[in-house]
Image 1: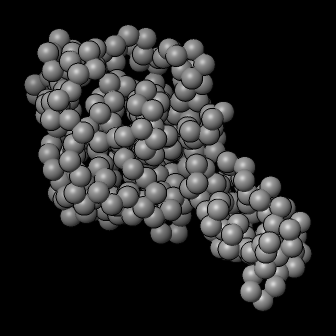
Image 2: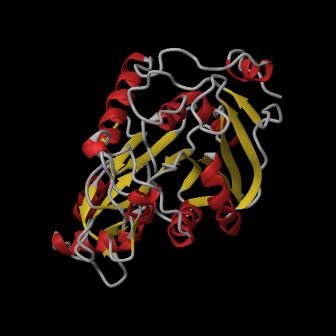
Length: 340
């Protein structure tokens, strides 16, 4: 029986550049037709057959992280990874993280960008982070710096989302009223916008001119894909999180509704703005894999604790009760598991 490099590459979905670099580093002899010895074949199989492997890339100085068959170019290993390798979170800015994902590698994007500071998490051009990302209470600063909603910055983020999203898949982006006015038209330039959803928080919030009780969710697609259910309304009555231990924490049910509409078992769900980790909990509840990222120390630490606890105890320490509102359609979707 003959053994070839191509067999290893095809069997384990190894990137050509990586396997060539490893062969050189191990001084493995390769024939002109790509043949290798049985011993060399086994060495390669043993090295690459691990579900997660970190490979030093001499070409660009980064690392290649193989997760669930995906090769992710990152500066370091994940900040956190579940034991079954189905949930991983990275600490990085959103653009850098997305650039490391392979093209057409993600099934659903569900994300809640910081309305007042998303661009502080984007790294563009020379790699400088725009603005300053401050902690709450630091020198009187708000949780995020003011949002610089330039077309260049936001479009760069959306174009990376388009690249990593598989064909015939969906993306959900959350907005408040102000960000919707400036940023929604840019979404239409990149994706096929299908609908604008309204999250009714039930409990009234703050506001100078009319107190706020809602946020918006832009629902768009890359290609054509029907929803999983025709029973999901365009107004979602789900209570806001009160006494949250993380700023801007959203109910997991908001993200679960997104996945009820667009995900299947084992879909790869991505949230480039991890925040409190609500999207990760929703992905686990939906039997999906999850990739998340945030630049904030508090975010990744908070999410790690939350995900770990949920996987071990099947309870959410930071949202102990269901926040589904008194609405018949919501009750059927969540409590009875019914959808038509």
